[in-house]
Length: 242
Image (cartoon, rainbow, N blue to C red):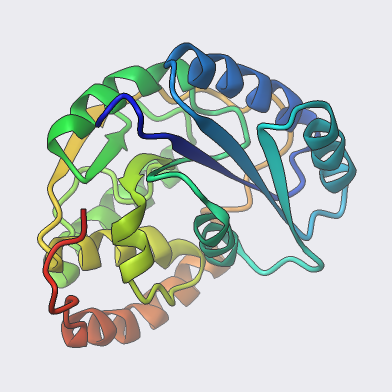
């Protein structure tokens, strides 16, 4: 990654009023210390609490913060697509707004990006209930077999990605599928993918909306459709974007 290349940090947020301000402040300190242009794009996915007004206040107080609002809750996949579309820098950093990741893990990702197009985090130890950890392991195995994703932790929400690849992908999946679809398409496009460990922290406040049984059941039904889309995907004829 050249020193002049900026980073757009995308923070999807749904009912994260209790976590958002601290997450943005911690992330801003890390991005500023990198010494390159940056922006923080908060995607308020139709939150029912005070997440939207808080995000707007943070943007008024700090010009590096921008906000994208969904008027209703559209789901995690839609929040990511909106954030990626709003990003303006050559690199996109994805991190959830719930405070379960430490932004200070980002600098090694920036170093690794000198020889990669996607730097993907994985959680050696997860601060989740045992059933969520089990679901994640089963999910990663399915994605590796069916989609050729081939990473340790498909849904780890700590990724640094070259925006030109994201712009060339027709991302369509919802919630639990978008990360898998993104990495599967990246593989088919010949992207260089590197993995690095990240810390996973207990939630400071609020509750997770992922990992619910109904979400997982719907995800398995949708898996076949995603498998077909990925298999039919033809990378752009111009080759791998840079």
